[in-house]
Length: 435
Image (tube, rainbow, N blue to C red; front, side, top):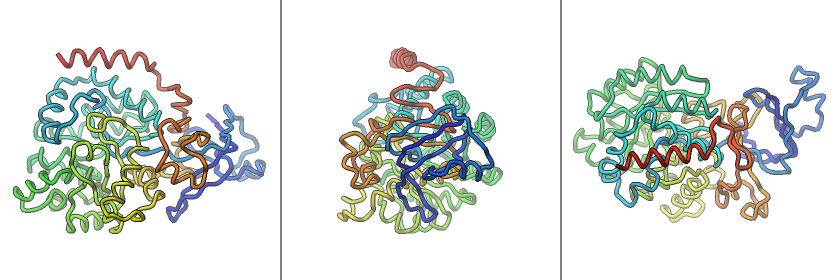
């Protein structure tokens, strides 16, 4: 499908990873962006593309609203929408072992599907074009995402309570072969849920498939301290010693990395994913964002799952990531809004191996969103980037495009299933699960 966006403000990221806003047009053909610029000499633009004419299926007047890359939710458990507002006001271990794990044992390949569709709906309406998921039944989520037209990267959540390296390998092939929209990386849940032999097997798989490795890492002080008691080293040092990061990867949460851990992240070019809302709600702690940025570590932002957040909203995460960095250092200028926005877009894309989705540029994948600037919270336009980070909200998302297809526009979803059907099915299933 050929779609022309015109009369738009467009958020541009240059080769130095600096943002700017231009006024102009963006053209999409099939799944790719083919032009970004002022659009003033269309004949010359067409000639540069080797074309005489383009037949547009749609021409969208953006009315000086903002086109920008879609947000990349760099840590999620999409299926966990089924536990939204079910297991709140508890510390991490009680929340996980007493409330979440017993309910997760009731999930099946069939009853998990509508909860994943529900999560994808929330992503699209809040401008998220990709999730980086640790899911139950990875092939199921891959199929759901592909059917909805949503881009989904997954990482294995295997642990010693269930699953095996053989199942991880099987899922690696199944998910990567499902669709161009789905991919899978090697990983495991966390050091504290995984025995050494299984961790070694995961490292072997990472080498076999030249895959990055991701895990929940140093999320709580207790987790980190107990790992040192068991092995004489932190989770980062242990996994590095096991050879897991030969092909990169990183960790989710990463609140309690010590100086040696930071050096490992820097040396191995790993990504640290911050999930500020979840970490606050579970009283896990605050990632030392400035320290990691100063060390040159790639940072991405995630929502975590709806069981611990409870909403899947990158606007909220951006604001919290910024505000927590400032208050934890007592330095209001420690990290600027532009760096936070980079983490929520390009930083997440690079964490997921989606370099083709990191910015709006010719040749890149057409994963983009249209932001309504004609609302009170986005006016005046003194600084659009700061408005996005500090005052933006889901209500500003007009349109979400994934892989060149508009999947959400003005409150309407184009995912092959009706919202009311999803709402009814999820509530009916939860009644059964709670009994």
